[in-house]
Every structure is written in structure tokens, then in C-alpha cells.
Length: 200
Length: 261
View 1 (cartoon, each protein chain N blue to C red):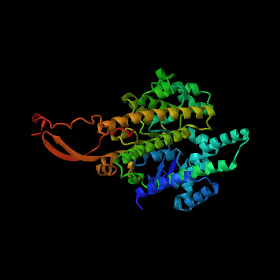
View 2 (view 1 turned 45 degrees about the horizontal axis):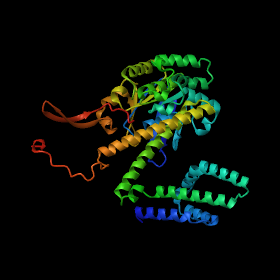
View 3 (view 1 turned 30 degrees about the horizontal axis):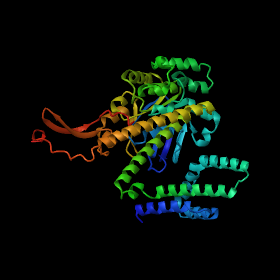
View 4 (view 1 turned 120 degrees about the vertical axis):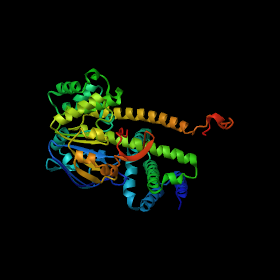
């Protein structure tokens, strides 16, 4: 199957999963996706669970607290939502690990362009984050205090924000420089240079 | 003092950046790691700082294996982190305190050293940072940030300095100070660079890493710098055409590339 067809299959699967409202069916699909996941299935599953853990835990606890207070708590609903999110994220990671996204988007030059830009940015940010994490570990001979952790997190967030603004501005300038934005749509094409400017 | 035996390391979802590397560093030695971008110099320094764990091979410091389990031992981690320090290539990753003074004093304070403040003053003075002492590190220029990061690790008065492209954004005066300091300090120093003119000032022994993390050379630095075939193989020298007085010819030579930031 071509990369583009994998992309279409993935998008169809994502839409289909959002129409399923039975927890047992989502669990069965998750099991099937794991079974089909190949050698890297547990690494991808672990990554998917870690990626959603904080957010889902917060949302689930919030839902549980509010619904208990209102007297309409539903464990089945909580299970359904969490299974759906884990399945969708697992499918996303599985797709990215299995299929070259650039190949999959090759049918559309604009989409390829956007994916390339996004992949470049993701790589740059992943490296920056890794360096921040390792530098903090390197500078702490003993367990860091909570205040130091908070300052480090703030410094990291500030740096990433600066970097993203700077990279976005640079990328926009580079794209404009390479003619990606058609600021002169509708104008006549450029004239041939006058004879004096032509090379002999 | 530092022993690496048959090291293999690959970042997640990437081919190995170091493969089959064995290396020993004696106490007081000044070792220069030479290699092009992507040759694994920064990864090797992170490995020597116990920040990444090799997938194969063994890393030991002063005869003790450095493993994640060993680094969970508080006493060992405390000793290792205060004796072996790393200056990152991008110093902003190391800076998170509200002022330069706090940044430089952070390490000694964390170790509970009574003279943390005095150490900070001493190293800020040495690196000409006193006038910036109350400024926020994030507001400084790249070169100033690099000096603050350097002062922050030197304030620990470590035994081993691991420096990743330390002169990449230093001004000439600070770079000169660093070279003098490294030659006189008596500490074990491992410096990575791809700047060949700077390399000759930074030590007496070189390890040249080829593309793909293969060690190509381990020996006297000046021998490495004279071996143009070796430097060309390591992508540290290149051959291109020159024109002199209308005569065109080609030969190998180096360019003192700036860091890959």
C-alpha cells in the first residue's frame, strides 16, 4: 500500500473511532491495533500513554469531581473517553512510525511544504528540550529544590517561546525570500531585463 | 580517570552516533575532540557527564562504573556532579536563575558550601561579569550567556571540565582568557571543537571522530592537525579551487567554521 493510501486509511480510522460509543468495542480495537503494531508496539503504546497521561488524568479527575458533586458520575463514560483518546493517540504514533509522512503528502505540494516545515520545527524543539533537561540534570549535584525546578521550567518555557517566535519570523522571511508568498498576484509577469543588464 | 570501553550510543529513532568507541583520559590531561557536525562530539561529552547511558560498552570514572543505578546513590551523584561538569554548546539550556550572581552561586549553594557567595564573586570577576551580576541571564547576549554558564560550572571548582564548543560565541578577550585558564588550571579538560585554529590551543592530545561516530585518530594533537588526509576524511578540511593572480589551483584547507547554532 502506498504512503498516501496509508494516510487516507489513518484519517478514515480516526473519523470512525469518533463514531464508536461502546467501551468494549474501543478496547477490542485498541487490542487489535496493538496486535497489528509489530515489534515496536509496546514502545509506541508506552509513548501514547505517557503523552496523554497528564492531560487525561487532569480532565478525568475534574470530570469525576464535578459529576460526583452533581450526582451523575458515570464510570463507563470515563472509560469510554480515555480509551478513545489512547486509541487515537496510539494510531497517530503508529502511523507516524510506520509511514513516511512526507511521502504520504507528496500528492499536494502545499501539504508537503507544511509537513516539512512542521517536521523541522519539531526536531529543533525536541533537541532544545532535551538539552534543557540534560543541562538541568548536569547542574544539580543534589536533588533540586521545588523553586529551582519552577525557575528552570519558566526559563525553558521562555526560551522556547522566544525560539518559536524567532523561528516563525525567520521562516516567514525565508519563505518570502524564496517566493512562497505571492504578494503580487494579478500583476503582469516580470519583463525581460533591458539589454544593458543582459550578460554578454 | 575516565574510561570508555567499546561504547555504542544512538539517540531514539536515529542511527548510532557513536559506535565502538574506546577512550581513556588521564588525570590532568587536556584532550581535544575534533569532528565535523554530527560526528558525536556533543553526545560523547554528555555520556562522559553521565547524562546519557550507552546502549553498549562501559563508562567509568575514577575506577567506578557510572550507571543510572550508581547515579541514584546520592553520595556518588553529589561527588560526580560536583567533580565532573559540562558546558553545553547552547548555554541558555543551563541558565535558569533570576540573576547572574544567583546563577554562578547556584551550584556551590546547592552543595551547601559556606563560601558560595565568595566563589560567585571570584568567578564573575575572573570572567568580567561583575557589571552584569544583577541582570537576568536570559537578557544577555550569546557570548555573555556562555561566560555566565562557564562561571557557573567553574564556581564548583571541579576536577574534570567537559566543554562543548566553548569558544563558539566568546569575544576574543574571553576566548584568550579561557585558553590561558585551561592551560594553567591543572584540571582534566575535554574540549570539543571543529575550529582547527582554536584546537591547537586547547590541549596536547586529540581524538578525531569521523562521520558516523567512528574514531579515526587518537594521538598527539599536532600530528592530527598536520595530517590533512585525516582531517579531510573527518570533514574538517576540504578541497576547493582558488584563484591567485589569475592562476587557478585546488588544495585542501580548513575553515574555522562557526558553531552549528
